[in-house]
Length: 218
Image 1: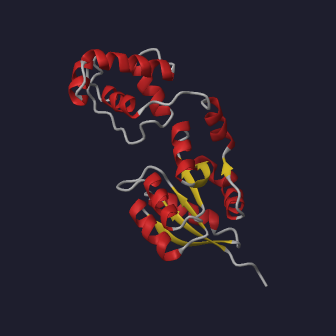
Image 2: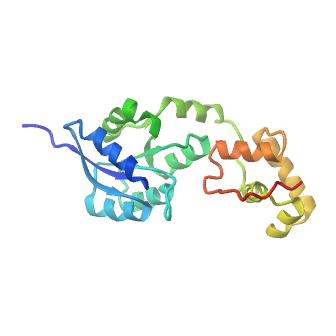
Image 3: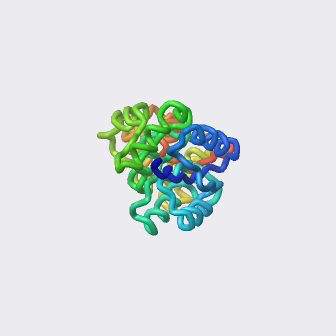
């Protein structure tokens, strides 16, 4: 008698990505796609209704994002097995996902290379972090994290606000802003404020950020 296939829920806001994943998974008799969702809210609902063995989900989606969806799913189903499948490899994003309950983290570029092995490993109770992603996390393992206040300031820098404007937005003095930015540059190892924003974006510290076209102030 053949084993019961692993039941999989796919969560991604791009229909073509979901279609591609279904095509890849359909080639394996021990895997069965039982549902799809296009955002975090649907993911929470479908997971509750379907109780899949494995959930594959993206991080960046409209409305409720992947991190919030994972937290909600894990709150309702502590034993849920979740694998992040994303284009984002910044160490901050990875650490946040693992803390939220992800048992696996893969880049979408690795779908045909590692996805099946990752699903089977996670379904068996293991964890799977793609080698490339693990190496990036290891490179920053000893780095000091930015505080909430520092991230707030950096978001405003990215959106082109000057020190004076940032102070007004955060209700602090311009000198406080300058001191805060100095700490940010030191923690990130950045040359200047523009470089700091670039590094923060690369590391996934500001995943929700969509900078406006304003030029950066001094």
